[in-house]
Length: 253
Ligand code: SF4
Image (tube, rainbow, N blue to C red; front, side, top):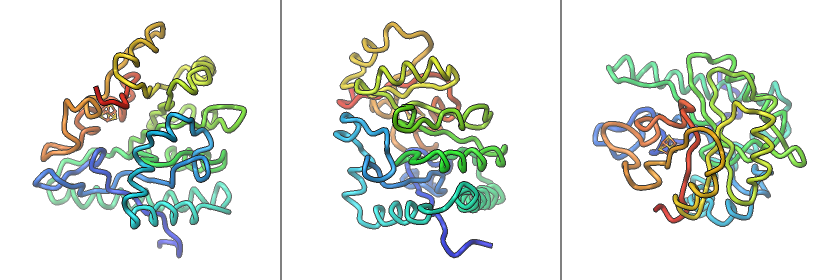
């Protein structure tokens, strides 16, 4: 039974695991959001991400969207790890019901869920709650980007370690590059999502780092946000699978 306060998922066209037949909207909401910014859920916010945060811009554009995100944060505030895990778990159960229903109607529905299309891990207990939920849902593949990896503020990486069905990307930009390098030395299992002014800048900034990296094809306008074949992220698959590091460009070129 759902509790009196529930969390609300978001139907993000870029990541949905089931598009509408005309390829324009998301049929299943497979992401979760919180209000962005250092004053809300992002203790690791940098000057660069505060400047360009696309999710924060959407919050300002759509009042209803903002209310959903604020409601989610208010529902979690004041709860302990178990209380937060309970709410998150109910939300994931509802996602599973949606997937089951679509499959019964003949759709192919990958069980992929993006934690935080907006916002971030705001406390250790909240990250622990998500780890509990991910561990209890081996049928679902989760992925997340986070700036909460600086031990001087908040480092959630130790509690997200060792979860086979979770891919963790550090959200990195020139402002937190040093902290990200240190985090990867501590936690070599994480990937990077690097935000540069241009793809060429990103390649240059990361040139001395080992490993494979991909320019995000949606950000570079090489694949659509969504079409009848699927959303950009499910079709691309790099981030949900954790295939390698990813580079994003503010200029989209
Ligand atoms: S690299 Fe692929 S999976 Fe990652 S954000 Fe871009 S389109 Fe989505």
